Image (cartoon, rainbow, N blue to C red; front, side):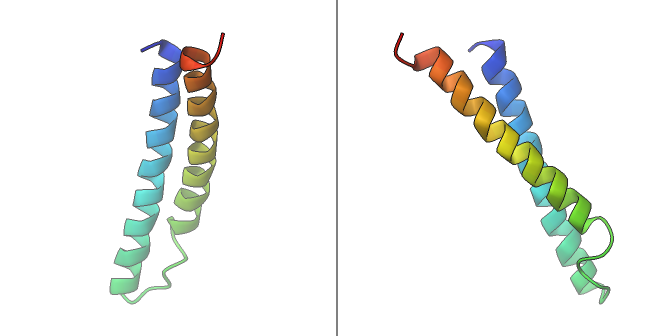
Length: 70
């Protein structure tokens, strides 16, 4: 596995982690009877989506570079 694919996977799973944190914060705030979309829910969601999209693009290019037609 080359380093480009490793970095791409780290970025991808970082995005997934931020999305999971956003979901957990949303549920904890809803259970605590606070406004669920306030707090860190929106920033975690935004950061997670950005990292996820960038990670998916990087994984595509890394996979194409490693296993694509040459």
